[in-house]
Amino acid sequence: MMTATGKSVTPDGISTLLSIPKPESPADFPEIILKVTNLEPKGKSYGFDASDGKMKIKAIFSSRLSSEILSGNIQNMSLIRVLDYTVNEIPSKSEKFLIITKCEVVSPEHEEQIRDEVKQEDSEMGMLSKKPKLENEVNSENIKEAKGIFLKPKQEIVSKSAAQIIHEQHGNMAPVCENGHDTESSPSCFIKSLPRQLDHKSQGHKQRKYAYLQECERRRGTQIQATMFNEAAKKFYDRFELGKVYYISKGTLRVANKQFKTVQNDYEMTLNENSEVEEASDEAACIPETKFKFVPIDQLGPYVNSKDLVDVIGIVQSVSPTMSIRRKSNNETVPKRDIVVADETKKTVVVSLWNELATTVGQELQDIADKSPVVAIKSLKVGDFQGISLSTLGKSIVQVNPVISESKKLRNWYDSEGKETSMASVGSGLSPSTKSGGRSMYSDRVSLAHITSNPSLGEDKPAFFSIRAYISFIKPDQSMWYRACKTCNKKMTDALGGGYWCEGCQKNDAECSLRYIMVVKVSDGSGEGWVSSFNEEAEKIIGCSADELDLLKSQMGEENSYQLKLKEATWTPHLFRVSVSQNEYNNEKRQRITVRATAPVDFAAESKFLLEEISKMRASQ
Image 1 (tube, helix red, strand yellow):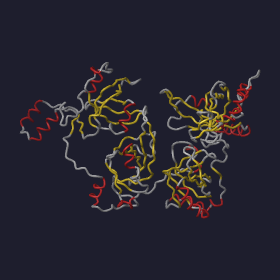
Image 2: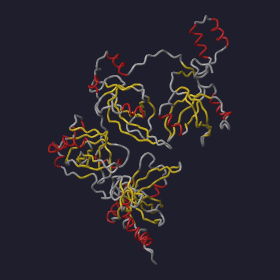
Image 3: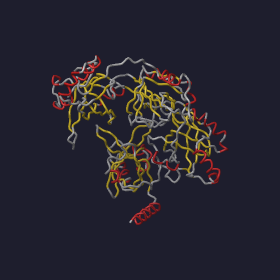
Image 4: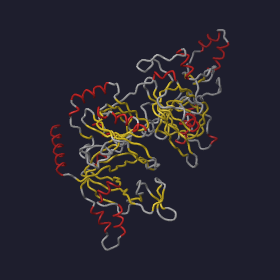
């Protein structure tokens, strides 16, 4: 290969790979260098387009190479040397795709040009050959001998930090801002959330990796997630401060993993130990305004227990005193304060403020609670306590009486009519046990066949439905319960010397309790399916606690009380609120239906529901 730098793709490399789809020995492996383009996540691995300058082929990296991509060694426009591969055909298509199982990086990132081969007539070549050639033209022709992709001659580049570049552009003066934003893009970032640690343990080694996630917002209001690993995490963790502006340079951009991203951006930033971070003290005036995307309180139901976070604006109705809550994970005590907010939908919801927000903003709200202030909160987690509830996270932002149009509109509504309006909790009307999904037993009603015949349900996030069904079978020989800690309900194991050990509480205990974790078959007029049920809901199905059922199982006699109790629980109608999600087992995705709430059938309410459904059917005909 003749190139200016000695690094180039292999001409006709893809044709060579296609001619040897499955090499049998290392001696059969051709020397092939390809270019990586359009790199994007594909499940647990990464797909890309492999190019040799003339041809392209769809390709995918083995999941074992994902670490090379996450670390930034392999990225878009990288050159890789193929060391092991397989060529397969795409089912139902005439295309082929390349599976890279082993490779090495030739060039992680470089400047390059792709050009099509241009066939020129001999006469044209003859005319060109008569012209006197300058020295730079001779060098250019040498480069063009390499077909397909060739590298530009490397130019001398003076490395500058982001701060130096910005200071040169603005003459060492702070840029002019309009409404908190400048008119040109800039490599400065406003810190939206403090880094949070993610623990990773490498397989087969007692080695801990340190990783931190951080969210930044650029001047134009675009958010991006920054990730730091190991040395970079240790280097930058203490440097970032919430609410400050920084210049960031020498980082890496890559396609964001949709499974883990926390902001609306297709890309994410990775900082390594060579990255540079400088505080931009002269740009404090250019901190971008917080942008909200409010969800009305009466529309919070679909977000219950999902990964999606919501923004809410409301009038403060009440503020509780600060409480101290002990975490189950590490026994630490953290402050918490509950506030109740309402909006124009005439619904209220409880918002739990945690940690510093409980003691600072929470105290401010308590001092002015009699004035019914407007509060806008960004990035809230929607939970299922009391039907629907909201909780702040480390990244949440709370603004009291914000100067935005939504706040003015809400204030006018409350002063004119909302103050005298009767408010109802958004969780009212739900069964007390209706957890997750945040809807009544009569909303989103479907048949079992609707769920079991749609295997794609719950792929992106759990889907919630209500069903009316009978318990048709309970396996008597399944593991129906586990030994649980009486303090935190986590699983306990046998302790040395007797008793039980709780990993959550980090203590031994002489006793434990049993908690249900079982699978039952349910049936309706459309079909049947298996559902998982946990302690509270299982107790309603069986009619007794797991400890009581275990006692019946241990009793010996002519009549098996244990079997009789299970039989009594079958063929009784129930209303179920269920979640549908996808679980992976042995590299195969399976549908998992979990009971989130159960209630006996209220035949009066059920008759009313059926009459309404009949009326809808007649109206649509």
